[in-house]
Image (cartoon, rainbow, N blue to C red; front, side):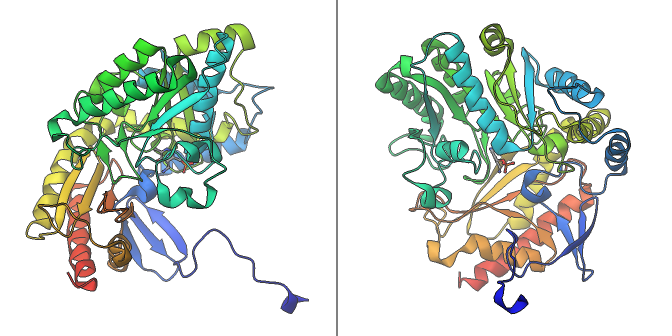
Length: 446
Ligand code: PMP
């Protein structure tokens, strides 16, 4: 019957090379072509590929037991990871649920916020507020928060209504706002929205301290996070920091919001937590959030079959041990600034580079048709995809984070090297990126 059956397909796009090996920053496909991983995939591989210590920790755990279901058992990896993440987060962010990735972490964060208010008898607090040009994940709740129009389109009408505020982006301030006033103006927009909805209706504000996929790395303007904290406190609204992409050391502090001197009530973390070795994420929350949840319900109602997966936690422990032992977060803080300078040197003389920004090893490059007006290239030129294709051909992996959307954004690309990238590798990434960008610009006739 073979002729009657359509060929099976997977989510992998047609025509992609087949991966064979990974060691450090170098990936090799089955045809023997090498790629330098300049973005750690989607900013996930914080230790690069094929780390023997992490691999061994996973194998050792598998030899003992793959997974002890959370209703029946705790485990050494689960307990050590809980202790480590609590210590790394600081403050009272020491309650957590380990899940299988970023979207699940965001869903858990939303449910924790709702459960917190339910336990306090505040059943009217059911609304969330988020921002435009944000990405919180591909499950329906996380997608409802996300200000990423291109990825929402097919699901509009079925998504919970979440008001979305202006992105706090100093390169592209809201109309009539000076760059130095963006933080205050965007924070005020949050307060206005809370008052409009009614503070007793709002559960939480959700934002990325440094926007990743939807904006091409947009750090919060100075003072923004502090003001948001004050506004949330004033109105009893929970502050949820989505650090799935920017957290776990990526920005040169373990929590991205550490940089702003602010603690959220609930935080998500994923990619760099397990470094891509196994699926792992977490929703971390404060004692204050835990207290009514534990008192009334005996704990969070967010569990899944693989919550606290033993071997995934063992991978997370191994990754975090190495990151801590080798001082990699501090290294990222220092080398990140050097990398931005290296990149600026490599891109010098290309008149279409509008902005090079970011923190630590989380770097965004925004390409525009006109530097003065910041006018993007036309969307149909899909420059960001051409940059990716040229980079791929040149043996460089970068993360294209979208093109012109309604003229409010240029073509952006993210470079997010593993934390242990050598100086030589960093300059090679910058060099190959510059070559690829020049070629892509030529492809669109610029
Ligand atoms: N939040 C943020 C900030 C992200 O960048 C992502 C993934 N890019 C997610 C949530 C969703 O994570 P995942 O793809 O692991 O489900």
